[in-house]
Image (cartoon, rainbow, N blue to C red; front, side, top):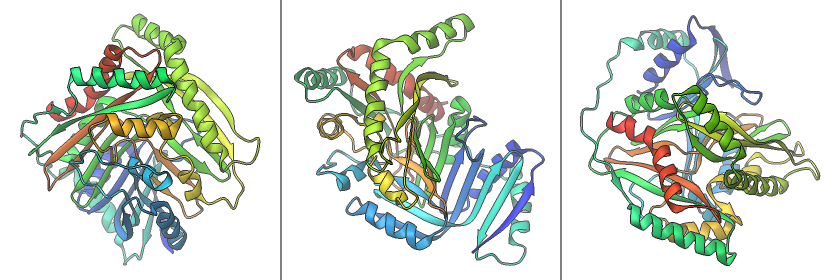
Length: 430
């Protein structure tokens, strides 16, 4: 049983910063921050889970079965990640591309300490608490702003795994697959990386988050492995018997000129290529959700709506379904994973072609970070706009991608990748 304590906050932004800084002492951290983006689907402004009581880590083999067993047995809050390569357990697929990071395919932990922040209130839930532990921790958190975080002054030299000419060649091959009818659309990604490099993950995350302030920001630490994410995208959420998925397809840059910025957003909303990209993925998500949905309950709540973030405009759709109360939470994720926005249509063909044309194992990039509650609800983001770091290997990686469709121009797709990569590059180089 968890001991629960509620605490009124004088200033939730200050508390959030202090809390994240205080958390750095632990080996297991999941931090989720909505950056004050309020919408009808959000539960909390921010969540922190630290200090593993129990854990599960596994490769892709039987991964969802093992997660299902772990989630059922703990019957508690669990936090963690699903890598893209779990596709290999749901389909006859493989991941044989280069992997410089070495993250396990799946990792979840049951935290000893949990903080749920909403509207200047923090709900603190501790497992196996000792006397006055919450009060002592709150004092430490308050004082943590006096801690000094070592700045990383090492210059980072970022390299490209796929160079421009090679990108054009591969994008053209992808278009060939589309013209032959093998696929209609596929998400093609490329990696930017730095070897023999060191960063301060906390400082890097703060820089990245300040540049983008997205609704699904997350910081993950698991021993010597880190993820700093400025994700704008929710993958899937379960609340009771309601499931929602919110795929993003369609990106446009922002402008400092208000008139031009409004025009860029309007142009995106009417762009036939971007709309067709989005609608194809909406159809795929509808199909994925139908595997566990009550017949006739899948509906599109919002189609191709443009949302504006600090760096880019994005086209987002919302698809909803209803499930029977006894439907297992992990089965819902298994039947929709990996998310449509990061794969393509048809999904399995797209994933095979992606594996052949990309140069890097995706791992946590285009996977997901999130949590399950004791009631079997869950919320997971899509890991994009993210920096991954293996401290022991001194390897830093961030990947970006875009949807290739029949109307794609490889040069424009390449330029879109560079727009998406800008925030990560600035966070590492700035």
